[in-house]
Amino acid sequence: MAPKINGTGVMPEDTRICVVMVGLPARGKSYIAQRAQRYLKWLSIPAKTFNVGNYRRKDAPHPSADFFDTNNAEGERQRRAAANAAVTDMIQWFKTGGVVGILDATNSTKERRKWVLERLSKEGIEVLFVESKCDDEELIMANIRDVKTTSPDYQGQDPEQAALDFRERIRHYEKVYKSINDDNDEDHLTYLKIMNVGKKVFINRIQDYLQSRVVYFLMNLHIRPRSVWLSRHGESEYNLEGRIGGDSLLSHRGEEYARKLPELVRQSVGSDRPLTVWTSTLKRTIATARHLPKHYNQLQWKALDELDAGVCDGLTYQEIADQYPEDFQARDEDKYNYRYRGGESYRDVVIRLEPIIMELERSENILIISHQAVIRCIYAYFMQKPQEESPWVPVPLHTLIKLTPRAYDTLVEKYDAKIKAVSTWRGKGSTAKHEDPTPEGGI
Ligand code: ATP
Ligand code: F6P
Image (cartoon, rainbow, N blue to C red; front, side, top):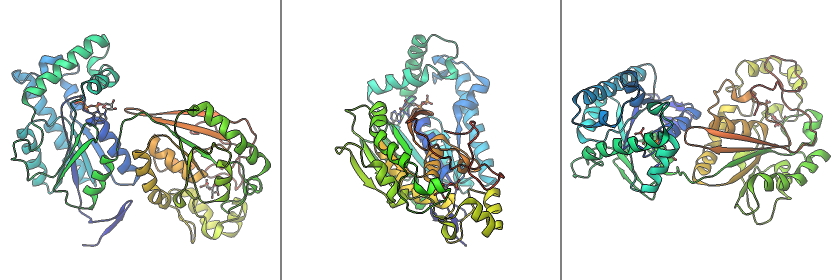
């Protein structure tokens, strides 16, 4: 069979995987599912989460804990119907080109896992069970407080009451819950078991490339509080001339930004929080980082270098439009996929940034000083920006951006150095000149 090239390398054309989440409520299953989906979609791998709770809510929008009592026959019936509807929709979705489906439910009994495995195997879909097991009471209570009391299940209810009811719901699940292979009769399953947020992991029968990618990614996730700071380099000499690419030095104003950056960082990071600084290997990012406190670890990554404009490197947009009019138009039509002659596309940049994302997931506080296109790609990962939009996002110069990942979204804060700089943005279909970005859609 002809191999299909995808975002992460080569995978057989017919790979289809269902990641089946397993675990008691409030163990971070939806969190893990959402992170996996974001990562895969960013790499252009069609991925979709099917949350059984959403299906159940259609019939039972605000159930109290006894709905989940296994002696409640009507509750059991509705829950089984919801799981069935989710799996049916997922199988349908696989038929339309889906590659990684994520079944987000507790799947906490052996019977349920057997049923899921049989239904999916019949369709030729590989099944990877991912269990989150956690006995850290404090963390579980924090999870309940942080995300469960605001769940649509408890809409309009007192948070204290909601937390008590959710605790009761968990007790019902505990009565029937079996961790994967605890009775030594599920060794045939392919699974990843994550204990207490990665303190220990078990891996069993991981079969192929894509499965191991997903497993490796999930093993790197953590939930310690952290932020990622992004900054473009200070205004460069090429920016002033409207030229793209190159390896020029900073302009006077760019130098001013480099001197101001430590203060912005102090304001945003604080003075006693550890921080690691990553730059590209190009002069303008290294110069921008050079006044930062010496106790911050600094690392240069080639992967953070600006999108390679190939034969257009060093030209202005107007020169590109004059010398390569067809290319100029083709890039406007599909900027994400357009690859400069002898250079790169945004898609190429995303692929080379994959190790950066993996490392970011493992790390805590990181400041990345890089370039317009690269920052767009990293921003797109955290903000789940679609590929048609991400290459057009205005990323202002002389601005420090703070991203703080939360349970289900990412908080964005901006620190404007208030040092003038040229704009290096141009809108789709506009003239071949840099212009001031429209405020909407920017960071
Ligand atoms: P439910 O079965 O009710 O849907 P759930 O297991 O899907 O619950 P989440 O909604 O994902 O639980 O809980 C989110 C919380 O879990 C977040 O606050 C997140 O920080 C935390 N979390 C993420 N990963 C883990 C993990 N591996 N173990 C425990 N908690 C985690
Ligand atoms: O103009 C600054 C710059 O970083 C160039 O070096 C790079 O080619 C360009 O931005 C990327 O932005 P766009 O993809 O919008 O051309």
